[in-house]
Image 1 (cartoon, helix red, strand yellow):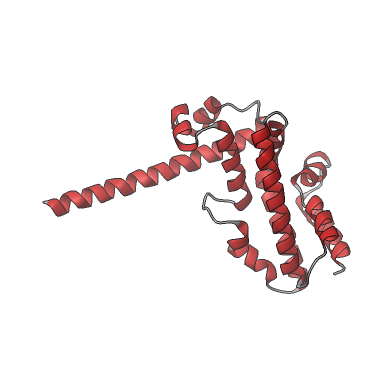
Image 2 (cartoon, rainbow, N blue to C red; image 1 turned 180 degrees about the vertical axis):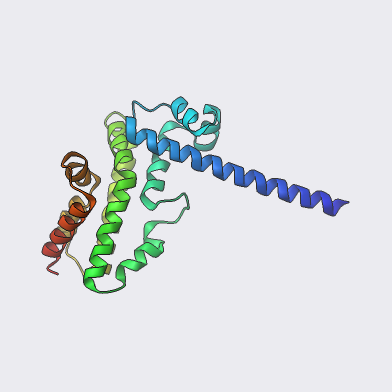
Length: 208
């Protein structure tokens, strides 16, 4: 009898954990979409809750605040899932060092593009929130510093040699969500055109 009870509890616990993970994913998906579409001020927790099919209380219990949800939504958008694994520790990063130089460069630019497709709208919401919230502005700066480190590591993996700080800085700006929005969202470039432009600029700046 005790064995049966233990088995039932294990099953119930696993089911609850799965449901909690699914709920979290649905909230993050809804938040990402709404932050991208309506910005920081235009997005409410009530709207996110309605889109995700949960209560506002559920969001508070899971994330603590609208700001915390925004930050986590950005993190998920960058890497593509909710797993707590940094980009530099993922297979996608390691793949930047595989193949010919042309293949590595194209793969790196495709990765940049995919990240911005998922996250550029959320980043705009972060910039909006940061303009009036010192805490958000502080972690916006932290995210940018982290992105610069990732750019530096990725570049050296792709080109196979050290890249000087000036070049890293230029490419950090070129690969930014602001550049993506100017060229694709505002400028109307297609994905292929955007990637071709970045590949050409990257080769010129790294002398490859």
